[in-house]
Image 1: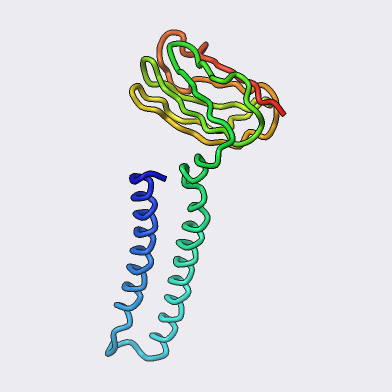
Image 2 (image 1 turned 90 degrees about the vertical axis):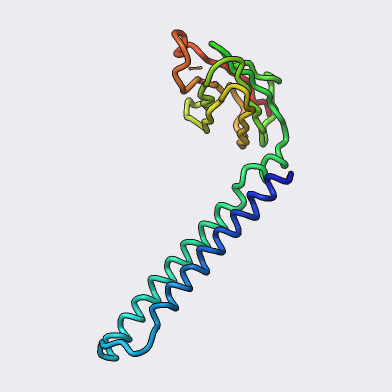
Length: 173
Ligand code: CUA
C-alpha cells in the first residue's frame, strides 16, 4: 500500500466514522426536553426514531465492513499473476497470453484513444469491465478460476472498426 492508497483507506474509514457520529448527533439533538406534545406520544416517537437510527447504523456498518475487503489495492497485492494489456485501434494485446488460474491483476494501457475493457468468461458472460484512457494505466483484479479462452471486447465506441476490437487469452489449470 503506497501513501495515496493509505490516505484513501484512512479517508474512507474517517468518512464512515463521521457519518456515524453525525447520525448520533442528529439523534441527540431531537432529545430536547420541554416539548408541547404529550409524554406518551413523545415516547412512541422516540422509540420509532431509535429503530430508524439503529437500522441506519446497521446499514452503514454492514456496508463499511462488507466493502472494506473489496478495496482494489488490498486485492491487487495478493494477485497470483500480473497481465499487461495494450489497447489500441483495434485490438487488445495480452501479455502473457497464457495465465494460470487464480487471481489476475490486469494493467491496461491505451496506445491511442479511450477504449472499454470488457472481460468475458469462456461461457460468454461479462466478468468485469473498466475504462481505458490514454496516458493512464487502468487496473482491474479478478479471480479467474475457470480454465478456458477468455475474450476481451471493447465496450466504448473508438472508431470505425470498434466492433472488431477483440482480444483473448487462455487461462490454464
Ligand atoms: Cu476500442 Cu471500441
